[in-house]
Length: 437
Image 1 (cartoon, rainbow, N blue to C red):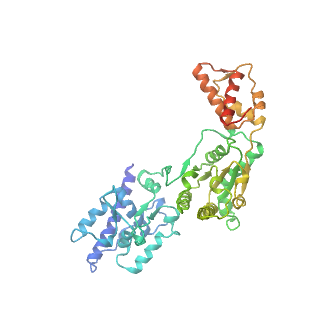
Image 2: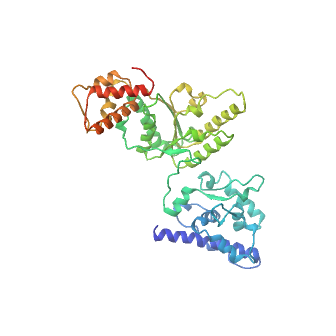
Image 3: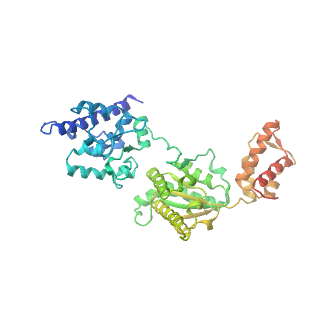
């Protein structure tokens, strides 16, 4: 961390100390003529705080303080309280492992408004869904236990913004129960994606939207005529390039591509699926991620008739996802093996539907040629033209075969492949999928 960054962090703590000390002084000695903290504090001229009010800046610092100095609040409390003990007006809780003071919504109310009821109600607006704190998933109040006031929830700062403040960059979110999506990347290039020209041109249309969609909506003032974001369905047999196409779109447009693990999104507990989806889309918003739902018909398939409570909530999950997709401003790709598996309510909302067919002979030949490393040579008995013509295989099948053949070549110390050798592994690939030649 640079000296300049450390200087900023120290200013944050100093500014918050001014605001907290002022509130305690005013609370215990209301007749004192201490200078209002508003007159002493200026919002830093950093890009993060552009357009922020002083109150928003202080709320941000209240959430940040325990991460910078675990003893920050306790130190001031010990100095300011006339006698040791609990001070409920300040709010705050203790963690399970973190033993310091963790601020709550009540902490914010006390520091910014004290006992002024009108001011306290105004502070609530910073925690509603329309405020940029919520829209950018910057900070929020944790849900309190049932029956307790909403403002007693812990004040939580987004891990991404905490990284930005403390290490100077936003780290990628970690895959897990609370973020069921995985960043997918590739070292391959467009030339490695072997598709029919028609299909390839459809994919490049998506690239045009990623690069120019915002200009179309806002500079050309189309935002009132077309919905934000772009929704596309990729369908076709496994191994035909759907995932690779999504990953390459991200690579060549500078966008992160997150593959959603539907098994983790869908919960057996009623209401949890919507919560998981809402959290995912909230994190993705304003980051321009490409969201890739593989095997999407597992959740987004045809809705069932309502026979029991499970069917009712399953249909609600589909409806909720429709709403999330329609308001998401980035690219959403749903991938399925079969178009007919998808709910028509979804299909009508797609701007584009792209079929990834099994490769024909010309494409198969190109994939075979591209798949082998230059260290491999071919026996005169082997004709890749004949292999491509004889065996109908997907790109994934071909790559699997080449991988096994190359491993065998390395193990045997022979880098020359003959046709019988190659066919043996082709037969194994078909057998693996339960197919007979």
